[in-house]
Length: 548
Image (cartoon, rainbow, N blue to C red; front, top):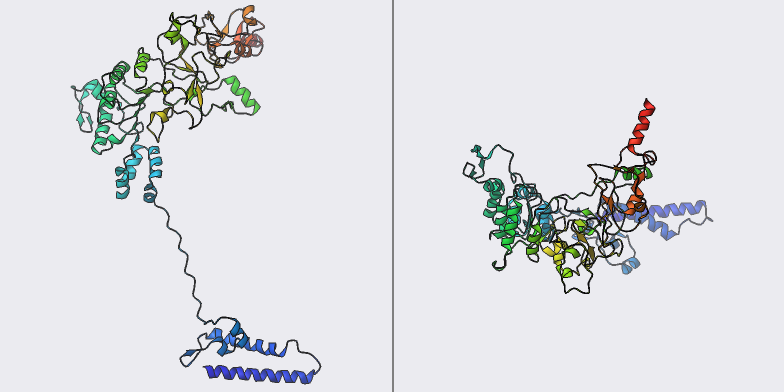
């Protein structure tokens, strides 16, 4: 092979020399376009590269020919460049894409598992454990997976709508209902069956937050959760539960916090019972809604006062607890203070302070009205204080400076913690929040139901008793307003509209009008069919006369 290549190269070189000689004979005075060495060397290099591409592995005997042997490089180029050996090119191996993370691999991260499990329902967690043995062992062997247990969406946790209790023949899991079953056992049957199953699977003892809102929860079942050792619940939610005897529940709570109770009991440290499950803000007034809509703005967006992100207890929300409370809850909360926290607190108004009415009090001002017994605070007044002095006589509750007993459990229930401090915390760590709450008796004739303004006993020592006796949904009053009342712009409230309730002077100037025809007072927000000058009655009479 080497002899053939050498002969071919020599033949090519001789032919190039003949061509060069013939060109010089024809044009002896014309300089070549390229130098002699460059022309010959370039042509030879192209030809030899072509031969090398066809058969790169050229050998002389058993020795492989180099670039110098083939004449592709000169002696100078060999001295300047390192020695290389020609070899066939190898294709780059294809890049491997990294494998995708599997669900099992993601859930092995304890941080992800801890934050994800409280967001899933019990049925979803059980379905997840049935997918593979790895996930089943991972979820069952992790102790905090069922720390937050919400049974409100669990099928079979509530009493089904069936006939009378003495029909018999109904089977609940392993329990047969007959005439010997008591009412408490009947209504607690579904939840007791679930608790028994969770106890057999060693799950019940790991539950720290138990949510039973809206289910059938008798007081006997609450007694078992609070007093029985098989439960380790720290926070219990029983809001709007059915078949719950509140008298019996108060007895259970008072027994649980008795002075001679065993050490470390009760394990339940917080109970949600008074606030509604879904707290809804008052609907916007129709006239306000239409006014805001005509301006192109949304009436549902509140003004940015800095407290919209806080819990309703820390806003000028008005009535947070709207349902009627049984007598005795205030005394129960007073006995549980410092032991069991609730989603409500006692009113700390000056009329509940016995020390202010004692004969030894000679420095602090005392309300002119009588002393009130303990009462549960139901109205949230916000952080701005009295409309006159911008504070409150007893001092506002400031988180985290005031004692924790002054703060209620906030909603919603915390998902990733079962500590009472975290359940009460209204703001992030390092921030403060102000709360002022009152009971209905302390705010009688002192609180404007429309704008949430209120007046303390120092700014309004003797509030006038509201003499108006309005009928249901009455929005207009007969006769002109008292001239002295029209001139009054100081503190105080009175009722002119059943829908608005007691209102202050600024609210009356905004919504109360005098009809130019009958001189009656009417509310432009709730008197349907009225105008800015006439009440609905006069407007209807005018339309009737026009039709006739």
